[in-house]
Length: 323
Ligand SMILES: Cc1cc2nc3c(=O)[nH]c(=O)nc-3n(C[C@H](O)[C@H](O)[C@H](O)COP(=O)(O)OP(=O)(O)OC[C@H]3O[C@@H](n4cnc5c(N)ncnc54)[C@H](O)[C@@H]3O)c2cc1C
Picture 1 (cartoon, rainbow, N blue to C red):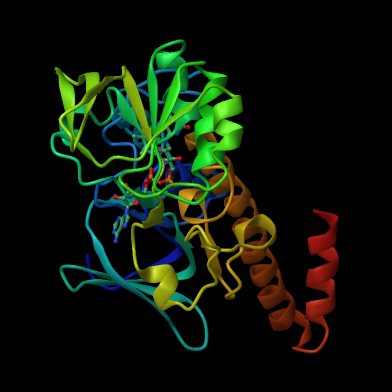
Picture 2: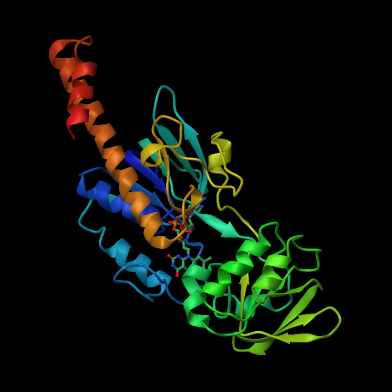
């Protein structure tokens, strides 16, 4: 792909980016979506809590979303973005790993997050089947089972207590650290605390049977929920100097604006509850705002051409308020 001009460049083709592209496509905008195929939920067997799509495999959700973009002027470009740059006086450039540059008037970052996982031997084999990060996504499938909360964090107490929504048999593993000071709340709610280091997971075909400690003891558990933290999947928000909250999410303003003219951050990469349906909703919110901004700019240019530069901005804003 050589140099090109798009209305909107969307980096990230997950639920957030594809939803944004869909609505922009229906607004007759020329959109390019870049994606390197590393979604956060790649290891999940199904997407849960997404109205009408309960349990659908994540790749199937994306496939349908991509298929349904076909009627619109939306190009899907499956390549890693190496960098994004602001242009002077306005607009953005996306630089691909191949070196190609694509230009656009607006930029949407929908690059998602990646979860930190503990360095426990064998964890990979269980991840997505009985080891998870999101209780709201996967807690139901382990209801009333023996659940481990693995949380070497300050908010471990709240995380462990949260899991009682799905089971009354919860054990908190601190990962070898001292763990939270306020364990009395856990004790009162019937949650034991294990401070010994976890060295392995036991079970077959992804089905967790026990958690092995450094002493050799194995504590029977059917599922484990990990709470360690997360980071931005891509470095662009940091390079663009955006603001972050304590959980490494980009702080956004009204309708997902990122504090830089022409830039939006949507989905998991920005603040808010990190569910697929919310990522999709944020994509739609941003698309609404972007289309309106482009329309106002176009009308202002028409009015400038017709009547001169001094009379148009106020009218554009007036029309904007009517929408
Ligand atoms: C194991 C697991 C299970 C989950 N289960 C559920 C569930 O059941 N229900 C639910 O609602 N949510 C679930 N989630 C959360 C859900 O995955 C996210 O909320 C959702 O994927 C967010 O969508 P997104 O579009 O913001 O990000 P993502 O889906 O992560 O998409 C971001 C995209 O950006 C691309 N990208 C990043 N950097 C670049 C780059 N430099 N160049 C090109 N492309 C780039 C990535 O390849 C990726 O495809 C789960 C998460 C995990 C980890």
